[in-house]
Image (cartoon, rainbow, N blue to C red):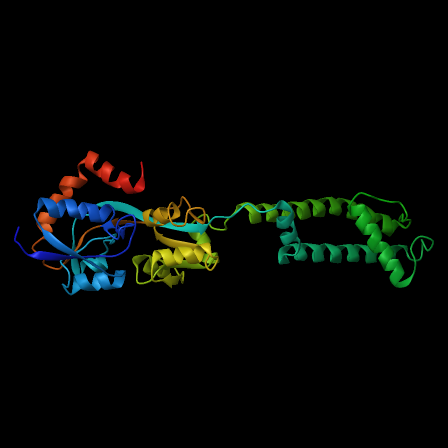
Length: 334
């Protein structure tokens, strides 16, 4: 190749392109590029951009190559060229790691929750209604056990509560036909109500302690979602009627996730996984869901003379199973 020093634009996108502890650019894409450039005797300078700046630089030919984790899309193909795809992946979802909490504190939080209070208020109203009906039925035929006025209604409330819990102190026993009918119906209803009440509380406690709230893409409609600004991920979410909160970097978004400012972060899955296993280990995790398949390529200005030779070198390495396994394994593990 010629002696021209080409300009290579890149952006932070670990494990594909990032600076190591010595400030040297490294990663799957960067190492791949170095091997290609070495074989082609290409001299190059690396220049850092953010995503928007990198795409603009490729489009206006300020750089000769864009090397990072750049998704190949029809819209981008309209304004600049791409090499063959060298990595196939998709979008993933990162969620905060839920720390195990004290069971007593977990129960206490549920007791003061709106959901629990809703259950409790509904139960009290039901007990009052049943108690009032019993008082109406018994106030004349059973004056010795059912007092008149408000005190009698409280007696009915007490009776409905002890009957529902099967305690049954026996201090109030219906004597009228209508009162006994109410008692019979209430005993069967109480069994059903107490079962639903118990199941609801148990379910609420279990979900609170074990579930992050996001298990699939559909769950994103009910939570606050983060994504990288000006990215294909953001456009994808918007097309699905999800309005994400955008961040200038993936790390900023994941830190907001760890801090509880958002509920989920959507981005390229291997990049999320890298951060979840390094800087934010123990704070965020990536769920199994994978959607919107996409591929990465090397971006080049439209009409570049380098495209064919780059593709040849790229295919030579991509089809070399031993080489590719060693390259990706260095950053992604086995």
